[in-house]
Length: 270
Image (cartoon, rainbow, N blue to C red; front, side, top):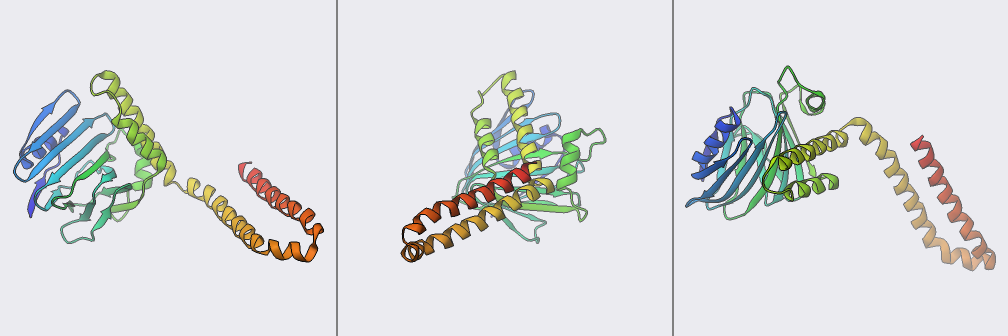
């Protein structure tokens, strides 16, 4: 097993550290970085783009030995949004902390305002692909986006972690992100716009209003489906007992059910 330690600092310093740790070669422009890795124990790429309010990283690795990657806590108090595309990404706060798994098509959110390191665990001989969006939250000159991120994803305890299935709309945005032309100013601006849209989707998904609005709709739909299912089991008996009158009565039953759902939806929308 290999153990690596990454010091936090400037984006340049982080990529220099990644290049040395993974024994790769670094290619960089003004805002974009790419580490090409082809060593005895690791192959793949680590890419990153730096923006004013956020960073974007993508890892595509195949390792020949298990790896523990310990990342120093950052005084900028970043919140990290992770999206696993292949393999399993594992995380803990500190070497002895509880390990959380992030599997394919799952997303995770991590923030850490303590002095404890975050540790990532990678398995050997299994390809791992994942993307990370990082938002620093300790700046005094933060905008509206950072304020929302801090409100929803910074915990009083110092550590916050969430894992769950990926939002379909976010998944579409990640796909868009990968289809942008490789170079140029337009690429940079389009990436920034997509990343901002992803963050707004994350905020909406984890806000109280979003969840409380859709919960009653789901509950009502499940109740109606249950009643329709129960009714469908009784249809033969109704027809047999009521004869042709039963056939005339059934459409009215479904019509009343439909109007009940429609009326509820209209009240909810208003």
